[in-house]
Length: 455
Ligand code: PHE
Image (tube, rainbow, N blue to C red; front, side):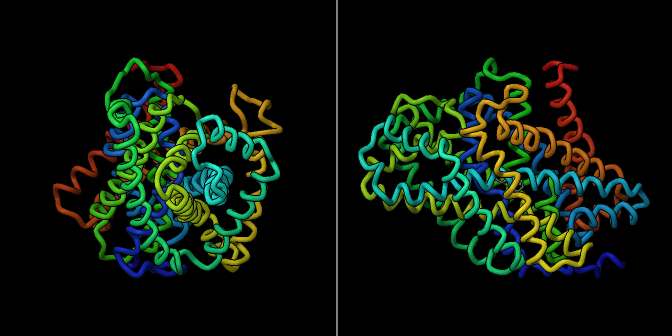
């Protein structure tokens, strides 16, 4: 069959492990360590976490499998993959716009992601300077406020991070990224374990765990459910083609089901560990769980300031967080760069430079939304909040919904069966989830939030 011989012009992963590392590198990032704790804090804990976990299992994993499947079958950027597969399956060419929706989402997400990654990067140096040693909550808070209220500093860190991202993208994501992720991911994991031990012995650990895992459904509403679902997409890098484009570099004989489950499990574990580190510190210091986007920057330094070798641990932590953000950023822009190379014949270097510059420029909106433009609001949201809401809660789930519909209803059963190549039972479960559960769940959450239905 023709599609069996199709190869990506951008190269291939060296094997299954390389793909798992790269996809985990994409999934594990600011979403797990920065965003998960603060949105969980804002929405009251346990019930929110439960909806999020449910979404990972019932929506996230099936869609991840669908994305990898589409990518590997199409072997091109998501836009061209969708164009090729829709033609092959005898479907309308409009499906390529699903690829465009993803490119737009990735571009918009990266524009603010890079600003936040800049915070993490700047904290490497702040922690190293020793200012957190013995500092109290007020002093730690002040450091954060001073950072975000200074547009010039935010701009500098954002610029630096954006350059770092585009350098890797320009070189091709298979070169170098694999090797970096191989060591950095396990290191991040280990450090989180160390911090958890600290939180157990010095924080209000049980209070934190209870906050995370005891559900109180009166604390969440339709909007919180949408945010929990949106976050499941965001944290697994789904609905915008990042995993699809990584799938297009995947060797033919790898099991898609197994790798997807491993990636989702690793991602979820990191998020829950981050929660179990942060909330015990929050409660031990009488801080506010709903402190917003600054949450980790206002809590973790307190712990670093008090523990033995806190400077070392803190510096290492922010370095690893920056790397985790880096390996995610790369995947946010890869679909766009791959398309520019395929369709416009640009070199990777040129394509990355152009995309990087455009993303950087949109990022200025986020930079200013924390200071000089913090009063400019639409629907009661700043530019950053609006961008985050639009991308994570609307664009990604919408992209995921269409991916599920395409893979579940429009592709021939034979095609998906061939590509997934799993056990009969596994395949049937996947197909059921992707045809019914996933699309219905996403649509119900959307309808619930706009008030058409209530649950
Ligand atoms: N999954 C990444 C994180 O949790 C963010 C991301 C979203 C990356 C979408 C790629 C695509 O930080």
